[in-house]
Image (cartoon, rainbow, N blue to C red):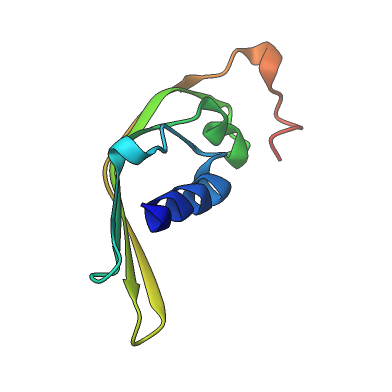
Length: 101
């Protein structure tokens, strides 16, 4: 399906830095309903670095990412469900209080 492939590419371009496993097997596109569902994707370990905290992401997942497009109101809603995150402290040689400010 052409639309399915386009949606997959768009999701990868916007979310590919944060999520692993964006592919056609876990992607559902409902063009008439305006719903895009992405199921069971993993958070990339580099996500924790975005917040400049002294923590490391050991494992993370999103059970369901739902995008609802309201064509009439030109509104997009994004819902996350079943988000699981396992964090731990970074080794002290990987961070300092100065770099975290």
